[in-house]
Length: 252
Image (cartoon, rainbow, N blue to C red):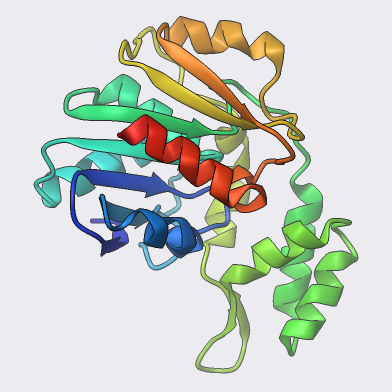
């Protein structure tokens, strides 16, 4: 099956990969700023957005999904921006399918395993599905489990009421909960990607630490780390103009 996408703009192809619980549309604000110079493909990865739902969800198969999309669209040369989970997919793709990949830009994630407690997030999402009768209900229910309104609002971007007026999410909560351990890990491979890779980090984020450079250097021996001040994990949201300026410098 082929991933769903939104394609805007004209020029060299730029593929953008969203993070966990997101969708391509979340990056529309960035895409509109870049569309005069690039043909931008806002991808919905499997189990997200308008793409297909499937019990399998790990980096080998997510990279394969992207390769199938590129072949289906007959794209010959392209660059990729990947954020968070999308950054791990982009890195996995570069290690498995490096041919024709030009610029690789990874946003606030490292090629390593993470320890994070998603249990409270999934507990909150399940409660929303069971009890909410309005978006206001959904916010209040999630806030009982998550103490960050930014994360709550992000998760509810995919919230809607179905044709039977039942609460639902665009992302496949069952598959994501089942595979969250795989999402926190990373591809095991001896491959390297030898083109230059740009890691854009938020100064206020702890997703990438100084000690992670050994993981990065092993798989991506030619890399540059760019830190953006006063930005957290959602660098492109916290410092949009500076992020765009950085992206334009890299891609041009």
